[in-house]
Image (cartoon, rainbow, N blue to C red; front, top):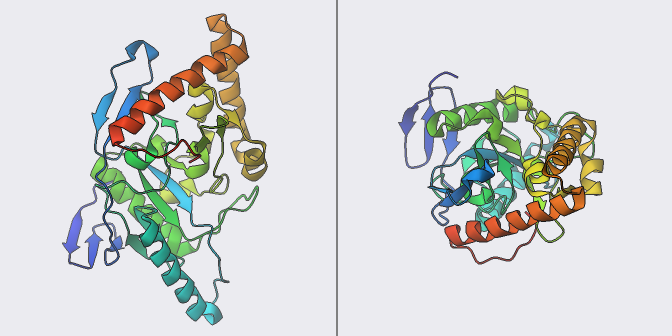
Length: 295
């Protein structure tokens, strides 16, 4: 990955050495980012680390109305995009929004947490993350997810801008490629302990076009680390691309239960109890008071 640096900054925009331009006219502050990460090795329980730098990126779709991407629809495309930007800004929904024309807008600054993923779950080879609002940046594309789609509804300009934005963010914050994932891979419902509360980019995300490995191959940590189950509607939306990772995570869970000498159902309960315990700590560490709704 080549180095990316800030070339020029004004009150309204930033330009980077890889060609990225960020429009900063619509920035709105939220609360400062701060979170606790938990050790993947459970023998290190109680040794969570406090962090304030983003550790990853969650990719979203806006799931908003899409006009045909055609010159005859130019006025409507602009009108929809402007309305969407105002809505996202009011909700402080993402750190960045990329519209149909590939324009990159900073909405919530990177040192603040955006309201994009809540208490979702992810992991790398050392840490478990339970509060992705705080620990991961939210990048949303003006697009929709269709059940089982093989390619996302991306304009070429969105793909190009997305690749430049990912490259810049990974350079600036040292974000690992395996921590760049879609909302559908991390979204959970703590009330029914199921993965897939939200299904945006459950399939069709063009990881390779953004300079990333195919992270659909990664086993969702919510399944093997905390005993969540897959929501049936999630599997319908995801399609075949993510099935191998789901199956591998389930096999991972069965193998760990067998090695522990515990029935699978009982082992799930143990892991779910750990999740709820760590979720309380994650909420305390961010000063949050919201309910355990799906994210």
